[in-house]
Amino acid sequence: MREEEKFVRDALLGFLGSSSTLRSFDGEDPPDFYLEWHGGSRVAVEVTRLTQGVPNADGSPGNRESHDNSGLQLIEKLNDEFGSKISDTMSLVVCMHLPATAGRSFKKALCRMLEDVIRESIPGSEAERIIEGAKVSVTVVAERHAHKKIRGIIANRNSSADILLNARCALEDRIRAKDKICGRLATRSAIWLAMLNEYWLADSETYRQAWRQLDIPHCFERIFVIHSSGGVTEL
Image: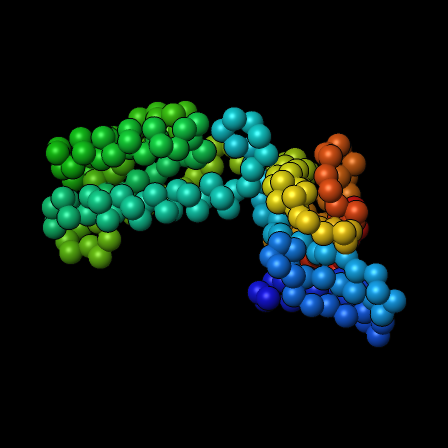
């Protein structure tokens, strides 16, 4: 069991207030663990993380962390593929405003853009294009013996300062994603969803308001938000 799952388990045990009559044990992943009362009743608990919610390129709910990670992974692949082709006297800084509408086409077009920039190789120059709806800029930096020849900056064009909107998007993204997984479980136990809050701008009341604005079909008997303090909010 991962540390975050242990934290969620302990928070739920404290919230339920019945640790003397309740035990937990690992699940099949999914679910992450089970809670079982001495009388024999049992529930399956699936754990997930709540990060800043942002819309995907198609308008569906997504999360900022996934967009950022996909961009950073792409930068690593580009560095592996093109690093040896870049002069030892310079490096490239790639800034991507994600999400893009089509990942595979985006990568192909970005590779062609890098080839054009490397061919010119003018220190201080900057190229900018719109690729699959995402703005991309590549800056040539005069730099000798850089450890990484291609570095990246990831921005999110769908990011919002609206905390309630972000919380609603995060809830919808996680509940829909986990419902697809847990709805297929061959278990007779009730299923609970416990979401560890890592979007710290949103508190209990924010998530309650966001939840009241949503109408999502799901398979979970109870849904909880677990805060970094160990506090628990049931939606």
